Amino acid sequence: MPGQSQARAPIYEALRGFERMRVVPFDVPGHKRGRGNRELTDFLGENCLRHDVNSMRPLDNLCHPVSVIKEAEELAAEAFGAAHAFFIVNGTTSAVQAMILSVCKKGDKIILPRNVHRSVMGALILCGAVPVYLNPQVNAELGIPLGMRLDDVKEAIAAFPDAKAVLVNNPTYYGVCSALADITAFAHEHGMAVLADEAHGTHFYFGDGLPVSAMAAGADMAAVSMHKSGGSLTQSSFLLCGPSVNVGYARQVINLTQTTSASYLLLSSLDLSRRQLSLRGRALFAYVRDMAQYARGEINQIGDYYAFASELKNGNDVFDFDETKLSVNTIGVGLAGIEVYDLLRDEYDIQIEFGDLGNILAYLSVGDTHKNIERLIGALSEIRRRYRKDRGGMMRSEYISPAVELSPQTAFYADKESLPLLQSVGRVCAEFVMCYPPGIPILAPGERVTRDIIDYIRYAKEKGCSMTGPEDMDIERLNVIAE
Image (cartoon, rainbow, N blue to C red; front, side, top):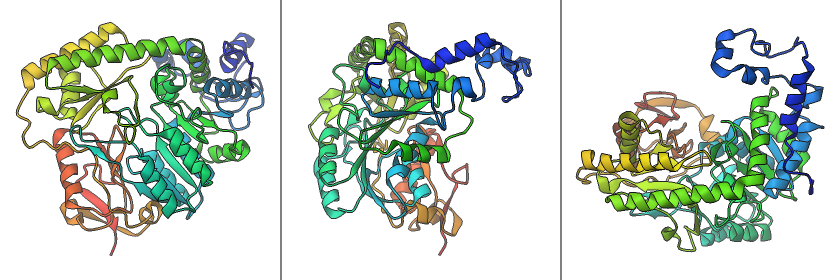
């Protein structure tokens, strides 16, 4: 509702008002404002437990909001330039899946890059939609997948004119952005919805000199991880909708999978974080961007590392770049990204977001300081001095184009058998394999297992990547479709 004051925080205000009422709780949660578990209360704090309450009339209900949550949704929509905003407490995974389930049914086609988060594949398994994958180009020097090329999207739309939607990462984990506005305009000309996975793009809505946000680009829906760069509590996100979306139906879809016991800790954190970004976001993210630019300059002066940014832009598959991302290639040091990640944590007490086979990502946000940036720069310099080695024999590509044989849903629910990794070559995979983070599948259900993929999995394991997905948690065996 335009014109509402962004200084308001309706959910937070309702919680503070409820606290003053001194209501005797004969409802859930069973810890009864913390009195039932003193150890938990001492650990998390009385204020936290006192506000961990159940849905009730004064506090509204997330499944069917009519008062304070409804007001908070309207404020969030206004802040993000959306027609409507949903509070999501099941993580951005739930928001991504709600987007896809809102526009796709069993058998519908959806155009998307193959380097999507596992939540997208999960949605395809749930609804039975059929993916039309666009294999991204790979930067040969960095080994990272790039964005969607507009020409590739146009070719896919021409080949599959009955597709229901196009999904775009905005940005990728590494900070790469596609030509979202152009893709959106072309897709809309052909009657297709545009969905944006903006798990790492919250700040696009509140920063100057940053890539275009999904709502500004005209996208129909966007899943926004407020808890990442926006500062809310882990697991809290927004699902944003444009004016063409049937929000009543979208809420029905959200309620299929989102909890009926929404955490007011998460809801109030979204409310307060939205308020902060609305009032001070531009100054805050200018500060974050300046820190990232400074860090890149210092890291590139160390030698052998390459902290990359907007120089990668080519107007095509790197249409734009998120300069708040501190992505650093480590191949020149002779170390895999995951090895630098482990050294930073184990030797220097520095926890970065992730390390893969050739890169690291230090996630910068509104809570970082120049002092900590200097500590990171110093640690990277010392790691180069102490651990640098020959780069021969290192695997650098973070993406292997898949051979898709079946839809994810068909493969996931098919009869299957478990085989040792090497024996699975040539068979069709029936489960996921991925490094997490970033959570982009190396293998997804319905894709043929190749020797290159097995070599990648074994190399990633050897380097210490955190591998997830298969039923066999040691990842010595794979489930494949039974013959």
